Length: 310
Image 1: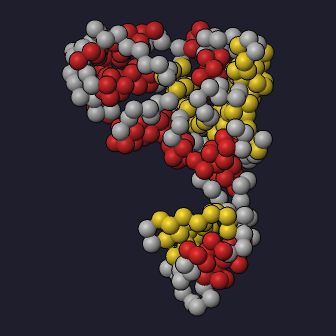
Image 2: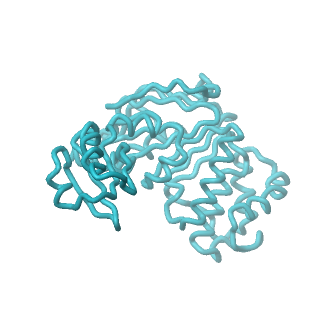
């Protein structure tokens, strides 16, 4: 497992998960999982289906008791009052379809201790923020699937939770609405919320996560900031435009793979030191329009980890 210690300035420690383990008969759900989320920090939780992400969320929320390990909020077990400051979006969306938008959101906010008058006053602004197509009095069943999902997101966030847990929040959202959600997550972070979310979209994870953790079969295999994790794999990806043709690149010592992308080539190197020799060969006749060398993307790393352990 790659684990990287981060020394950047952080807010107060808020959520501490220590040595969580959960088994379902012979099947391992989560094994010895530990992480910390600070005030104003976003953690991305990634892994294949069945890796243990939803099980982790359920144990944090005390919907599922761990076999061992602890979950602490500001260094104490979560109390009923603490749970009122949590916003949770489950992967299995659930709304009362015969209720109006307003009645639905007011009801969920009341479960978290927010007064109906406060919710009613705030709701129009949240509707505008997420560009919900519908009136406050519209029934949930009369909304499109996308607008239903946005209503549930509003119900998750409208009470301004201090801890936000989002299980696959981007699932089913088009790029415009996904950006609206990203913006809201960033805004909640800037207001001091501690956020943990799961996603299969590595671009989302890499773009907004301060820290990420990858599970495989319930075990932690990667942990750190996106940049720290990528750096562990070396600068083994090159994008190149030069006089060298594909045949020359395929034959170049230390080049493992060559893919043509438009008028450029994308190369996978055996190790980053190959890049020095490649650059020297590409520029042997002078200027070239493009040469960039960097670590694999988070999506590539995810695929590497999965492929190496199948």
